[in-house]
Length: 174
Image (cartoon, rainbow, N blue to C red; front, top):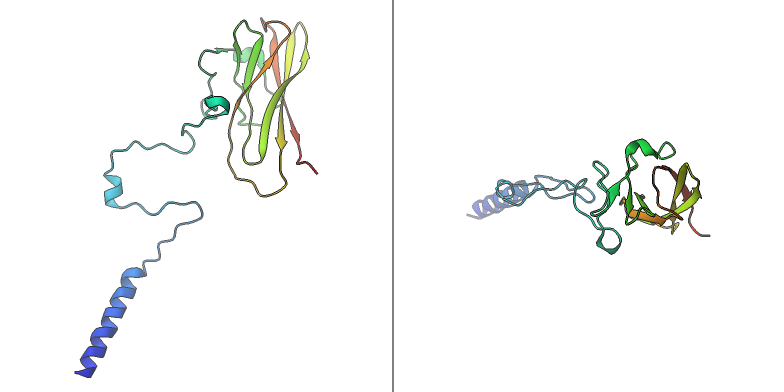
């Protein structure tokens, strides 16, 4: 009788260990594995790359895979935008607002980085907009990337001038 109790107890422990030992691991920031109940959900799925986000004052950030001007803005023809100084993958959409004196483009920010735009040069042929990315901290930062809309005000409407986009980076304060 005593052996039977030990055998049943050991069997129960082994069965419990076997059920718990499936060793499914969830990595840093990962989600637990889906089950058949999760797959039957009717909720729409969005990819992190295309999920809606908001920039300053609720203005949507650019979708880097398909950037468009913000609502109400007028896109500047890609033929009139020189974005050769920007890294690959950087949004190159430029737009005007109002009478054409307000010109916008998307910057890149995130974690400890803020983006600002300024007019570096205005001539009768072109306007140079410099997007400055400033790292605000030398400490650990989140690994997010946002594309906030940035606008500058010109002395006169853009008209037929070319927009030259430049990028500069400023390190953390010391």
